[in-house]
Image (cartoon, rainbow, N blue to C red; front, side, top):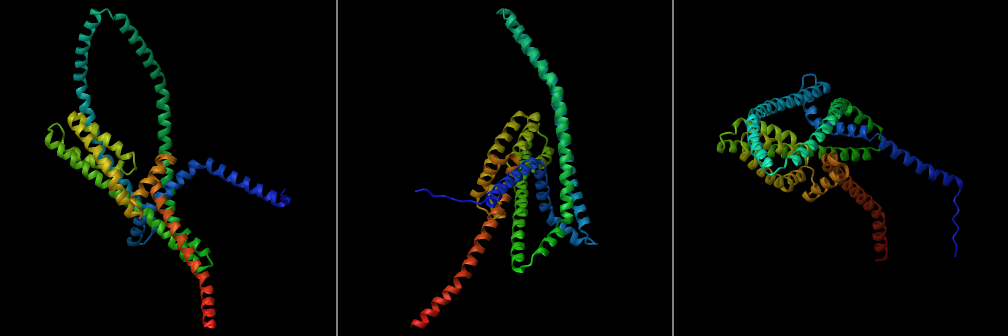
Length: 378
């Protein structure tokens, strides 16, 4: 049995126009992905700073949102400057100390090389050694040839990062200033007051998820930084070569870098371990072991527990969302995965609640009719 399906030309053309439109939309989004990422980062920063900006604007004399935003930015820049002031001098000091020990290391290497040269002459290995040295020189020449290109590309990347950072700060600044005005315009478009209130409540809940995540990340970073500083201070009591004033820079390094999920804390731990190793290799190794153990506790217990309370997600959901975000979108995905999961949860709960309410409304007339018929039959 053959079934013949007839489709008129208008429907056929409309279908393919929709398909082509979706294809062009996907292509446009892909082409503008870099710009959309910067806008997304700016929006995330604006949402994170909206609460302190609103607080400052409400308590400033003129109640100006522009002044509140400016004060919040000044405080952020001051905090960054304080971090740089606390971190850079100890790193420079420890690097200079390491540079002072280099001559002794070189002398030890020379003494070892003299003993090795006698061994080479004894077993007639001059040809093999000369061949290895020649190969090493050629390899070094190739590395030095590419070093200039790497430096130029690195400078270009640095300027690109600075420009992107400046653009994100400007965008977030404008979002903080114009955000309330745009939201007021959006709510003014609604004709249905009930729907407007529902969507406003939904937006407020999603906003609470983002701000809760930011507060949770700050809490996790503060806990990790405090324990790292305490660990360095305790090591300074047992190892005289480790200065006690490294504890405060350790707190600043650990807190700042651990704001980046998954990888930032690791970078901070490696940096602090190297600073300690410049003074005492044993202390550096002990701190590295401590850091590995603490990271396992933080990643599997502290962070999921705190974030699950802040964004109202289970610890399993937090870990799963971070894992998916990192594997799909990389580092940026790991940063935004938790608030996105929280927003999806809010949207899903609102949809189910609204569907249940509509279902109950649709069942009420039938229930009334059934009761009426039952009353007439009795």
